[in-house]
Length: 280
Image 1: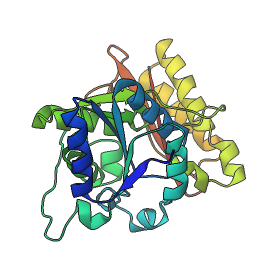
Image 2: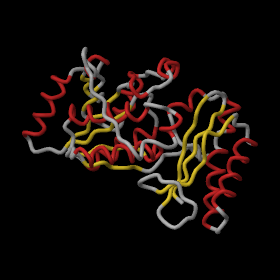
Image 3: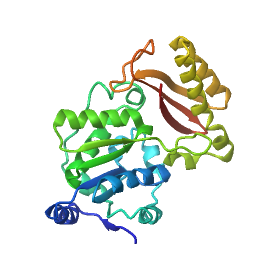
Image 4: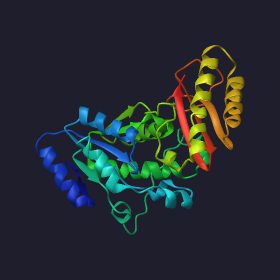
């Protein structure tokens, strides 16, 4: 059965309050649509952990620093609803922009520190847009738990810091990255790759795995990371924005593998910017 699609906050709150009156727990999966198996894994996790599940579909204009990326972002609501029907989520909340940002909207949520490096440096204002819309969606859905993929590791840390700092009463659940059989992290951007580029794309994850093994084997950090950059460029990527070793929670740069760490990368292929990360 296709989930109910709600567009207004008033309608959403009527449903949420009926669930609350029955003592039910609520999970939310924030998305921008163009859903794939990774999103569905989040919805399944929410279904297993909560009585009711809301999936939000909202292409957030505030987190795009490139207007071209916003215009090109795929919008596939009918297909998304059909996919979510297979997971039996309860509600799709798909508000228009002026429901989220009504006329006169003048507030921005900014999370410093963890948002500054990596994606924050390459996409100015991106995480302010993420933090603002996430804070809005948490307030609109009144959910008990929110489910995010670990593929966007920095985003996950920004959201965790936001919730901690502002005492938002919601539990943030990080879920493992879902990958294609060849290792490519699932992303809505992958559909923009040509067939040739799609065959090249798994090289990013493969290079990261090699670097992680090298780091675990005692290879100096700088040498392991440079080797990964060379490998990615040799595979056909046009540019590497970064491949860096960072502390897992605070995303501080590491010169040695002496604490929980993530290897994070962003590179461009066929005009598409791909990101990935793995634990080390």
